[in-house]
Amino acid sequence: MGVALAGAAVVFGVTVWPGGDAGEANGSRPTGVGAGADSGDCPSPSSSPSTSPSRSYPMSQKPRTIPAVREHTPARGPGWRPSDGARLVVDDRKLADEGKLTARELGLTYGGEAEPCDGDVQLTLTGKNQPNSEAYTMTVRNGRVRISAATDTGVFYGTRTLKQEVRDGGTAPEGVVRDQPAKPQRGFMLDTARKHFTAGWIEDRIRELGDLKYNQLGLHFSDDQGFRIESDTHPEVVSKQHLTKAQVRRIVDLAASRHIKVVPEIDSPGHLGAVIAAYPDLQLRNASGVAASGAVDISKPRAAKVVDDLLNEYADLFPGPYWHLGADEYRALMVSDPEASYPQLAAAARARYGARATVADLATGWMDDRAATMRGHDRTMRAWNDGFFRDTKVQPSRDIQVAYWTGKEIGARQPDEYLSAGRRVVNYNDEFLYYVLGEPNQFVYPTGQRIYEQWTPLVLRGTTPVDKQYDDQILGGSFAVWCDLSNSQTEAQVAQGVRMPLRALSQKLWDPGKPDLSWAQFQKLAERVG
Image (cartoon, rainbow, N blue to C red; front, side, top):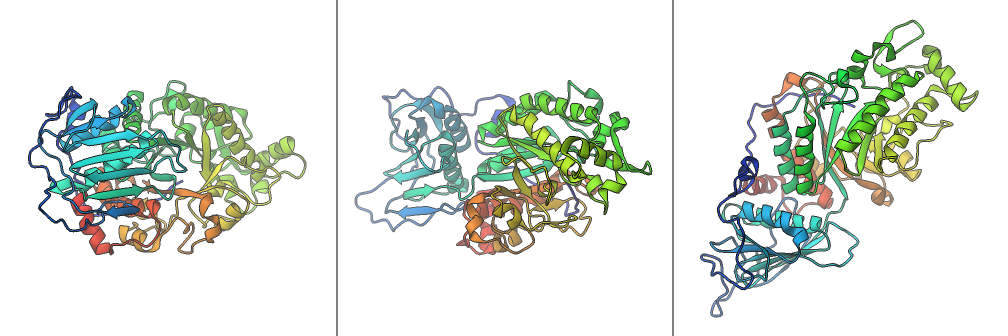
């Protein structure tokens, strides 16, 4: 699916923490991160806040982070900040990756599995089952920090909170944070098909997303303008500018280190112009022989074979649990009489599904067939809402989630039609969450302030929320960058343009209630915490 933008030429600055990703990139080990102190040794950290029995401390204040923590129990005490000689220790080797990363970022020594000492940060797995696997608790007490959770993901999010609290010499306030997200799917989608983005730029966004507690990165890498990932099964469809599989593996691995799942999308049966360029005989044509832009003729078995070849190939490259099937804007269903305009599709529909079957039935069957292909790879599928049709004989598989983005298509359906039918939905509302390069088709660059002040996950279409009874069916949301007019902005301009919208969306997906801070205060906070 897609659309476009323009914007200010401001270069986005990536924060590099002491001993952080710069060392990660060149393979060097930052100072202070090494084998770790012996578990019986407790070094004496210098310059760390320490409790004084003769001093009276004020009650601590709630931490200021993005997204804001859900609950904080205040206490009296000096709080915590990194100090010379302080360590980060873990109670389970499963937390080694989170521990080493956070130690690098905060300039601490990684102490491995060891008992905590004064000034230390301890990461711990509780072994308890929790309803929300991303929940965590962070306790700051007596000059130490303890971050605990049932999963390594929860622990990771606790480290993100601590990282923001102590940035620029800040102090993590005394007390206990209990925190968890409201929505399980929190995403950023990037259209790499229309505009090639470098691997390094994507990696920078992953680091940014991880610190904001996002957990999905969508890659729309196939469309009319390009096919942007190396292919072994069909190298003829790949654009000159593309990511190699080695680069993609590094992206997937970096995302995994930040507890982010990559959600690939090969859109079909529309938006396949790059594939059609290699296979022009597969292009859909109407009764007059006029070609339909980007659309394959789904009455031809070879079209399905080529797409399934690609789906099966990339399933191995992207091991995550999610897959986006696309299914939007199929040209045959964007005319007033699909059966008359595309008689070959109407005939194929009747042959497969019976005398009263329509082109919409055939398109639904196509989506279900692609879902079956990915179900064989144990994926959870989603498709754009305009790939679901009203009053068809063939019904989309129940396990396909609805990626709701628009209500502008022919025969547009209100969001509650999907919800009342029991479908689960991911919010991509094009009114608030679509960043379209060049701003074509009346699209306007979304602002962080508008998301922060007016949007919630219940606002699926336009500006009107659906009923709260559907809240549990709305799994979360995703910000989407579409590159319709690809030269309208540079990579740096895109990064700057999405910076505050991403922070606002992070807040509203973590806690959809009215934020404590005004927008002006939120902007200042974003300047401080990165």
